[in-house]
Amino acid sequence: MSENPSPSESAAHAAGLPEPALAAQAVAQVLQPLARLMIGHGLQLPSMLELLKKALVDEAANAYGLHDKASSDTRIALLTGVHRKDVRRLREAPEAVDLATPMVPVAASVVARWISNPHYLNADQTARPLARTPKRGQAGEPDFTTLVAEVSRDVGARAVLDELERLGVVDLQDDGYVVLKANAFVPKEGLGESFHFLAANVSDHLAAAVHNLAPDRSGPLMLEQSAFSLDLSAEQAEQLQTRARQLWAATLQQFLQTATVAEQRSQADQGAKHRVRFGVYFFDALQTQGPGKLSKATIARPNKRKAKS
Image (tube, rainbow, N blue to C red; front, side):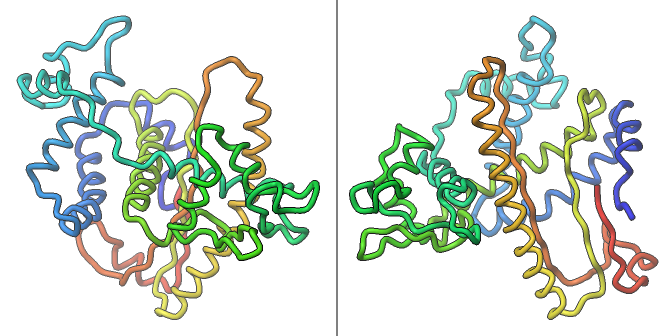
């Protein structure tokens, strides 16, 4: 059963007028974990308000401009509710410097290629240990330096290896072989890297959902689904999390193999280029009642499993 409307129902609702009341209810729920992030990392309301103003101004200017005409400060102020003086100040402010290390996407892409390209896999589809350089391995054997060069020629293999070692993703053995410690890019250290992926993953997930509900949406619905189960013991919830990780590991490898082929086929295409992100999440918490929570009637049905689309 579906928690959200079916795709056809969603399409019908999306092609209508804006729904500020429904949007406010959804935003209130989305803000709860965001508030937890703010409090936990010392981000207070004045800073958050400035970030929100900046986001509103940028989005209004970039996505809601008139055809062949730049948006005026007055129009942006009317669309967003941000004072016109603030609109002008924010539009004239220099772009913020991206503090995320440029090594993160390269390192993640190296691991993605390592676990998806058959050239770098064992017969059982696990990642092969790779000689650090061609000279350290056997003739014709894949090596780490070649792997990095296939992903990027702007970053040296030694720099990528040092970063992956720092994050606890790989081990460099005494015999000169690099061993992948996990079948995914999961940094064990580096708060900056964790925030980088939080921003990228949550932003794209929310963008997909917002696209599907846009009153003026054009194009097909994007994939945005989940499933949930109720009335579980702590032990059963933990078992489901283990199973979810197993399913994701298998799906991730299959998706990356398909993506590798798609990237190769797209190289000759001179048209506009697209980026995609495909993810999964698992959340476990105690069941509670309150605003925006499940109704008693829903919770009363034991172990009711539903799919959210």
